[in-house]
Image (tube, rainbow over all chains, first blue to last red; front, side, top):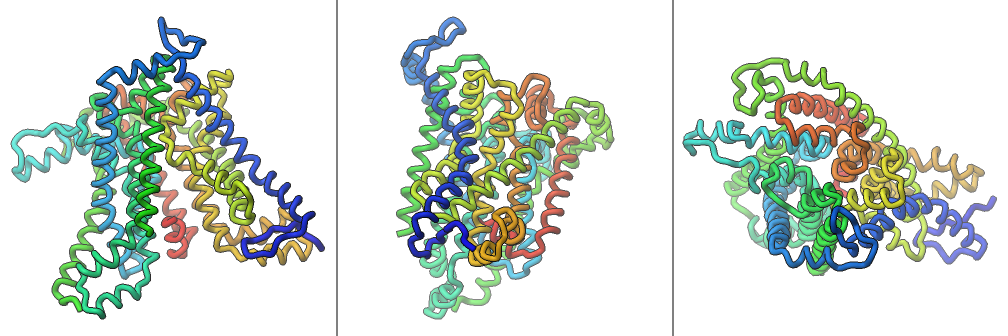
Length: 298
Length: 272
């Protein structure tokens, strides 16, 4: 009985007939995903890029090549402030999420009781199953002027009158941290699992205290996980639309909202240009993080 | 050796971190739960009184039922499509070595780094351009694109630990490719398959940015309907709906953990 050659990485070079059959198998297996990516990703990206080189005048999109939309975007100083606040929020959210996620991952890693560990993992993971709209709305209830936060702060006596949190960038940042936290905890936890437990023993045997062990041994080894989590968090924060709209209440203007508004106003050239800026920023940050990860692994 | 007292302090500090983290994660969900029983229309805590009026109001909002029905149907279709396409791709990429493997993986994973709204706007312009706007099958394809990267990764993890000699043995004994898949491969990746399916379902059920522009007016999916509702009203009806959805998620989660009894396997998948 013969069967198509399906060389696993360690196999010897397959015979020629087997190779053609393997190629046909491969094509059949990969065709659906290639077609899907073409239809919903590659072609749409080409079309929207083409629209960014059109102009928009009198509620009509021109048919001819034009750089007007780019010129208009980059000559308006307001747009720079929007880019600035988008980047600023993404950086702040990423840093705070890391500060919360790292001890949480460490706790998950060090928990001895399997049942407790399982519960904590489920709790951290559970928000992923709840709609982002629901979670953002939940924070708007918490942060409202007469919400839990203000009521408790006044109750404790820390403040006299309610502080304005909802519809400020603070609310947007808190909401984003909550939504992205699981995506940061798990990469860090994974990098901890990959550590050899013997390292800990060795460090202690050589007389290192916990601080020394953590700073010199454990932390550098979890850096790839930290960077992987930070990368995902930064990308999600940069593109966040629902959380930012619901908790910013239209008062916080970020790049995704600009894309949304321009599209809703049928101004496709402008929408495409802002979309392009958003994509370029996402792409550049991805490259930067890849670079950092390579440095961390050396 | 570290001194025992600092070690005890560290244990408490760590426990506190875990507890605070869990509280932070669950806090807005708990407050939403309390708020849904409020007797007044504005957000005030603690509520001046308790009532079921928001649940009654929710029950009267038929547009939410229709939207929920559409979303569930859509999510079910997306789950089937992504599992089929994702499993095929994961099999191809883990089983074969071929030129362009990196390129294919890159193409599959690309939606992770592209903001969802950027995808949503691009597909909207594309579908209008080719005059295919308003077709519901487009929603299935776009949601599948967004869900596929993680479905692909979760199933690839299953294949990565697979003993391929079992597959060869089955083929040598005369089993066809489909029989081999369902009898030999499938039992090995069952858990990954279920987790990937749940992931695909919830991803589709949660799509707002990719869907806002694609739905026909009056035929919104549930998250889009909720998002638009919140733009105009902020009463506890939304809390009541949120509680229903959180319970739905909780049932999914309990079901999931009942299916997957081995903790290590959940961890393996979660940590990828």
